[in-house]
Structure formats: structure tokens, C-alpha cells
Image (cartoon, rainbow, N blue to C red; front, side):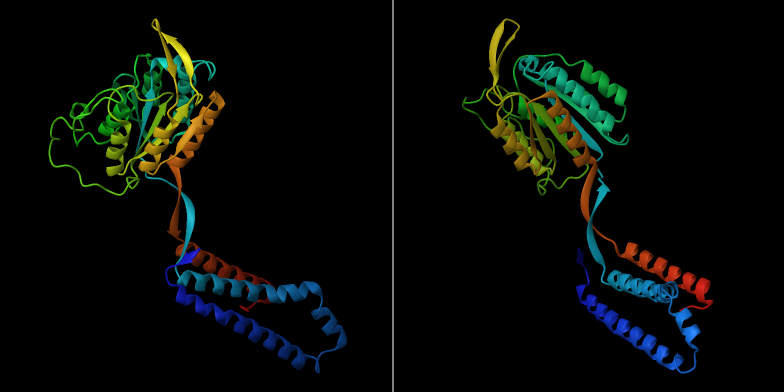
Length: 346
């Protein structure tokens, strides 16, 4: 806990003085009563029940004062609060390697099941959009709160050739910022290792946006799921830079084994290897996190973790009002008990 006005905490030094003053008054009163009270009355007054009843209201009043003094210093505490997340984009790999069965029953089916569970856990007010990418990327569902439409889009996934991870990121950004007019055609394409031209083939429409701090955009986030490495399309690191400049976090999820598996698809045989380094770099560049899921259970757990991360976050919040309320309740409790037991305010 921290305080906006820490110097006011010096007022807490008054509390030991008040305790000492109360003890002095209590002893002085006992010395004054002893010469005039009979022995039986003294014994009755000194029973344990009478003693704790006598001291409880002042103790509550002292705690109330301590609470109010802490409130005066304007304390800050980290509290779990609902985020202002309004849109989450799911960018899901639908390349042929997703038919591999090292994640039972298959990578694709496990990804679909985990995505459905993720949607079920999200608050209903959060919009979700879906981008499916393979050799190219397409919007399977624009951001919506309609969970039935989202589940239907997940069920319609069709496996294709190629893995254009960068396209999935850029198209997700286009769905988050439709007014900006991000166009995939602006970016250069090609296979990894080929000479690249300029990253933009045509000037963007309108002035370029002013870059913001990475991860500072709190209204939307992207979850990128893939089981391989880029084979075509936009460089994923360029796409991550675009997301970083707009403050959008890109959480990356790697599915399958790092060593990879050989998969047959439409008469072709391919070896799909998970490019963890690129996925980690994308997450790091956008101030997000990377997750690895080597099984269906692990993938479901990843989505559960992401659901809690994206809907609940710990923020440093001023709790002055809470401490002031606690102090007021303690004052009321002290006065009430004193009136009930002694017919006066102690």
C-alpha cells in the first residue's frame, strides 16, 4: 500500500498518546472509587464480562480514529477490477498442419473447443471478432456480442495451405480500427528469406497515426493461435510493430510440439514446426504474453487464463472512501454499544 499524502501519517503518532491517556484515566477512576466502594461492589465491577464491555467501545473508537487518519493520507492499493476491454480478436491458424493429431483429437478440433469455452467464459458485453488465416487471412466474424454467430464462425473453419501469421495480425487490427482503413494490400508479401521491397507498396490513406506506448490501448486485444511458422504473407514482426504502435497487445499461443510433426494434406507432405521465438517476440514487442499448449487440456487452460487476464486486472486504486466508511461504521458501533450497555456515549 502507498499513500498520496504520506506526511499525514505522522498524525498516527497521536494514537499511542490517546491510549496512554485512556489508561491513566481508567486507573485514576479506580483509585477514586476504591475508598468509597464496598468490597462486594468492587468484586462485581471487576468481573471479566464487565471489564471487556467497559473497554470495547473506546477500543472501537480508537480503531475508527486510526481508520480516518489513514484515509486522510489518501491510500492506494492494488485491487482486482473489471477491465474496460471492449473488443477481443481471435486470430486462428487454419493451415493444413492443424489437422495433426499430436493434440487430440486434432489441433484444429482442440482449438475450436477451446475457443468455444473461451467465449462462454467472457462477459456478454465484450465483443469478439474472429480472423482465420492460412495462406491468406479473412474475417470469419466481425466483432459482435452474439455468441451464436461466433460459434457458427468457428464451426465453419476450413483448412488451407500456407501460414500467413502477419496477415492475421494486420487483419485483426483492421477490424479493431475500421475507421483507420488498414489495407493488407499496402504491405509487401513474399516467402521468408526472399528479398523484400519496401514494407508499404502504397501510401496509407490519410496521415499516419501517432505511435502510442506499447500495450497502452485498453479497449481491445488480439489472441493469436498458430501451430507453425510463417511461410508467406506479411512479416509477423512488422505486423507486431504495427500493433505495438497502436498500443494493442497481441497474446500469442503456440499449439503442438516445438519439434514439429509431418502432416499430409491434399497430396502434400509437410513438416510443421512451431516457431516459438517469433511468437515470443511478437508478445514481448506488444507487452503481452506467450503461451505454449502441447495438449488439448493445456490449450483450454491457456484460454481460461487469458479470459481472466483480459476481463480482470489489478489496478492501483485510491481507497480513501473505503477507509472513511470503515471509520464511520466503527464510530456508530462504538456509540451504539455504549448506549446499550451504559446508557451514555463513552
